[in-house]
Length: 601
Image 1 (cartoon, rainbow, N blue to C red):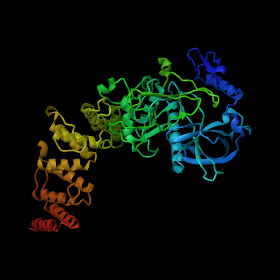
Image 2 (image 1 turned 135 degrees about the vertical axis):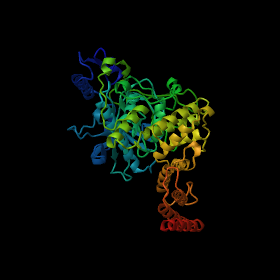
Image 3 (image 1 turned 45 degrees about the vertical axis):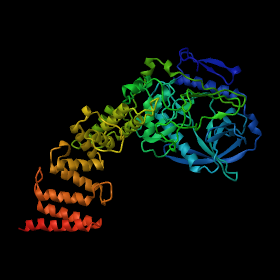
Image 4 (image 1 turned 90 degrees about the vertical axis):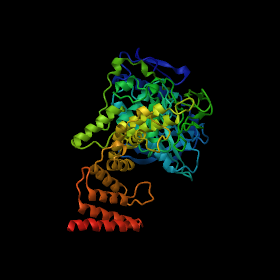
């Protein structure tokens, strides 16, 4: 597709067979334009000499084809006939590629000597590779294909697609090997982004697609490792908020953080009404992308030390196909581009490299806002407003305890990366960046971030980002208490106990309020049922004994209640007995008898 403005498209399957067709006044994206384009492609395919015809002489093998139904989320199978060469023609770090011909179920022919029978079969090097891995890989790619379809429904300037992948099991062989099977695509094969923060800025569409999936899924996942020819992608990776499914390349919220650290919203993001992820001024000004154009596995360290990494599926071809990797310094790959060229041993048509920057504003503005129910903005303000409005709608008087915690975890992980100095040339910690994203995570309602900030403001020891400190003039006890109580409301057990003690004893200049203290002590006990003296938390029996003392004395907003006090002393004694602390148990049994005696008098 050489020039969209003159409504002409160049087709061909070799340097000597190029020809240009005219679409008259039709846009290539209009129904008539697409029909003319695909008709021309079909005509070229039907008349092209099959460069893989030598495979026709190989023996025919019967096998089982497994395909994945995205809607039903099940695999279904049928029989298939294939011819496959014995030696691989390409390999990566984990898989090797074989040329294969697959007889079509749709064409009423048994002729193998046709280009559309040509496919690429990929197999893991390890003979003992878990068979489940093959099926998980297909599910990953087909789930990514679902998100590509959702993206297309939003009417972006350029539609995209992800290659259909299936599994072929050669059931007649003794070991019944499995192969991933895809159609062969040809052209400039480019890795647009990786699963660890690398971004190729030559295109807008791939980056907007990744950003779209984060918002459209309600922050539950993001499709990255976008690579392929033009806007036909293959071998993507999906990060999920919980890090489950989709193999060891799923880095969870850490992978999401690495994407947004280098992603800069472009004109297509704006057209799709995607909101900007909150970054520091320093991050926004950074013009060079960080990260490597490689797939990082979960088993590898994500610390600030880049360390050795290897390509997962950036194939190195044996003959006739060249690959180029430009390196700026050892240990880091700043630009990765694999160029797949036409050779005598391949036969699919060229998919040209496209430049989505060429579309004018009027064309882009035709894009519609995706209206999925799960859609959540990437900005803190937009995400929290959406979540809080939903909570108020379901219970207008309820405190919105569930907030944009996935987005908060993404910010928290990004803060940890800054704390480790991952994005700095000298690998020195970036405390300003760490503090910004820590505050952002707290704004999203992430209890761990709120508790960490509370510890910083109240000068309490904490386990996260231990060397991060606030300047003396930036410490604020009132703000620290606010973060502490918010963290407690969002379920942080340590924060619950800290708030209870603050209201009980007046720590951090907090006014004593035993009614609130009793509320938080009660919540703490509910969360640490069965706690013993040797846990990291204060044992529940000591808290119940403290509550008994409060109701025995009364004051600070709590009414004196000897009967309630006796019940709490008894519960504390029974818990102490279960924890083998007989001395305290006897003490509280005696105190229970004393306060109950007051009730009788």
